Length: 102
Image (tube, rainbow, N blue to C red):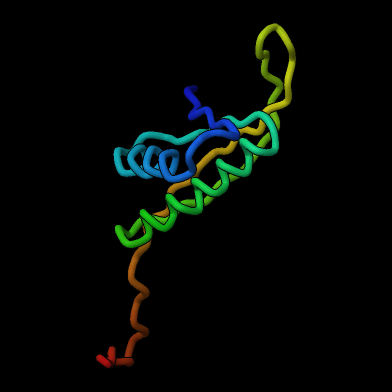
């Protein structure tokens, strides 16, 4: 499984664009971060990507997990964030109720 690797120096807007692009292309999005600063940038990117996607009828949510990774021969704890896609549909009008235009 491939991961978008986010660091504390990553631009949240750039990562958000990558997330939105992958979601629109139907490609699963998984993010990997090591360190508090990287997690901060990743969460900001997810919030920004959500703002990009909602007007197109797509919403996203995420779930974090811990993972041990090896970096430079050293074992580190990473946060891996899975991004879930939700299609937004217009709410159904209850039977017998007419929609009123404002």
